[in-house]
Image (cartoon, rainbow, N blue to C red; front, side, top):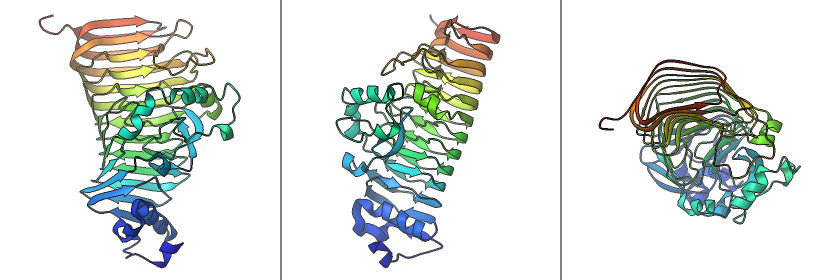
Length: 411
């Protein structure tokens, strides 16, 4: 490889991308490749704006964004080819590379106080009509017997937008300190990963389906001290969609989310709706939510199957939600295509306590399926103001203690 003949300055396997300026939008990737060939280390992005195409991390690499550093990703879809193995809204396929991607890596990190800009405006219009046919085909691929090798997209005709940051099948991941703006679709989307820490990260994005953080069939995840202002759900825990989620059969489990702030967007603290591989052991606590559609939101529908169990929400302020402060709903209404089956999901062991807030439209909505009612729901020490109080159906057993939902003053 030509670049190896021009060895950059090396300080304990520390490489600076300004030594690779001649490679243009491939400078970051070239520095990563050289660092990996040297056994791993740190790739430094200094202050200034750096253009880049797709970046593929390798094991034992830390991309470090110095204060004032900006990586601005290309808005040309061709810069995210060839296609890579991915999971798109809960279904495996081959599609455009995520802007930052890693497959089968260990000990990877993106750190520092810099900024990642995803040029999402160039992709967002694909949501309106263009992606619908390919999305419908993909959602039904497993039930229609289409094998993974034939689920190949990565075209502007299919218009399936990539995630921003997606490690897949990786271990020991650290994302810390940076700001990330305006990606094409889901922003931080780890898939089939273990031992993930996301700390002091700010996600600022307003486009369609620009969720902030989507742990997807992952284990041992810590999310702390992060800020989200998103165009969709702030944090949404997932584990695959319908039949393809059952085939993969990997739950999302052992997740802790603490000391985070969520402003705007759809749901703030969300599980589902793609939870067909199961979700287990989630602890969401000591967070502040304001101005979202829902605060705490658990959502699914007939056909998803799977389960959600052992989930606890605690010590959370929820203010000014436009729909519900707390929603647990098995009649999710925004699916691109109805599931091919009617297998119901199972929700049990959900505890929500020490919740307070003002200015909400509705306090609590709980709506289970009549054929698969919720089990073992606990609501305790909830004190919120809301125009509407409480709607509940489809629950087999629920424990409620110290619940106060007050009308706003003057209503």
